[in-house]
Image 1: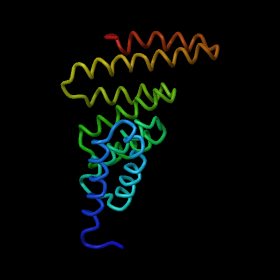
Image 2: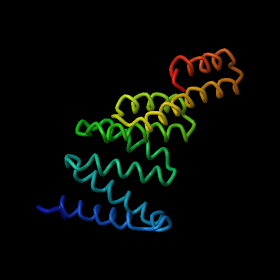
Image 3: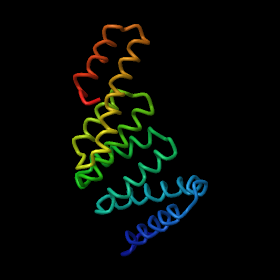
Image 4: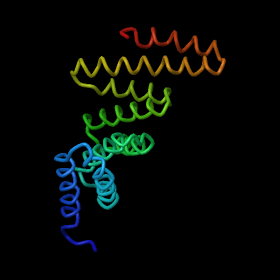
Length: 170
């Protein structure tokens, strides 16, 4: 039942799972991941105005990604992107998770859009910028491959040309 310290008790439960998760081996992380996700989603449902929520949801999206659950990763990333209280660093990470998940799921158009937005939000990190640019170029190229495999050669050629014009550094 709700009480005055419900929010802090809920956060303490999430935090305890998170610390246990961080200290676990890879096998242990696989076992704890679903419990950590369940705890964080329950917390986000009960305390949607908590200022710590964006960090909790980012953690949840990362855990879904760890489990290769790209659909759920994108769902939680969308929650972060739509949340007005999400700060710029977490927002940029949410876009990266959205992009990686879309790419892994074969939705290269969505990956392209998300990579563009994640690159815009990136602060001074040349290595990360280079990686995201390469993945952006790859997502455009993959759209061309998809069109070519469907016999849409003109559309494929347009995508292939876009790689050079949209991502000249690639």
